[in-house]
Amino acid sequence: MILRPFLVAIVFALPGNAFGQETQPALVYKLKNVAAADVAQSVTAQALQQKLEVTIVAEPVSNRLVVIGDAAAQKRVAGLLAVLDQAPPQVIVAMMIVEAPADFAKDSGLGDGDKWVLTPREARMLTAAIRREKEKGRMDVLSRPILHLTDNRTGFMQIGDEGEYYTIHTTPHLSPKGDSVSLKIQAQFTKAKPGSTPPGETVTPVAYKGIDSTECAESVPTGWTLVVRCARRASGKDARDILLIMVPTAIEK
Image 1 (cartoon, rainbow, N blue to C red):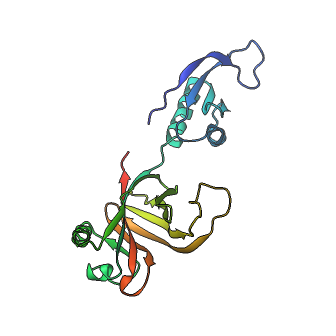
Image 2 (cartoon, rainbow, N blue to C red):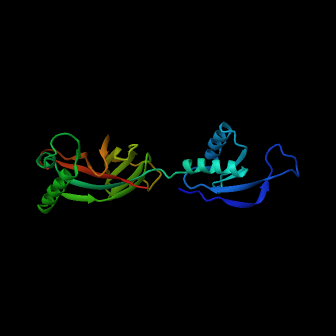
């Protein structure tokens, strides 16, 4: 990324200079991805270590840095800012939430357990199994959201109607090489009591008839598929599983 400074109309005297002595031009850098106040402290510390005669002033409202010093010092500071003002990595998580018969995981080859990591080939086989069950009327695809997430930041989604809600929080952590994503997932199924108000639409406490939730963390090679059993509804022959199917992909800069 190339930072584009622009020359301000006024000039500032370096600290210690008497009025009327030689002044230094001030360059202003507009920061895009980091807070000016935080960067000012970091760059000032590094400038002191490198013995650069430069003054750095933060403008928090406009998120700009004013850099005062000679051309050589300003060039060094510009290099530091280019490193610090980098956009954080981004991750796309394509999701599918399905409601399936309780025996689907075993019959489709997933087996026992509550989470599975699938290769692209295995994921295609799972998609075919979902399609067959859907044609038989035994499978419901509840939602196909796509989350655009910043690395290490939690994304949130909620689906449902006035009686049932599925809430999912997802936090991705991209590996240093960008070839895998660690996904931290918190999924919750909530069934409201008759007459209650959906979450987020009232400031008063809401009573619920039942809550089923799961938490897990799993590392997934980018482009592979993570399947998580979020909840089991009913029991016996009427038991149904809520499966969360996720495909994380790192966005290349």
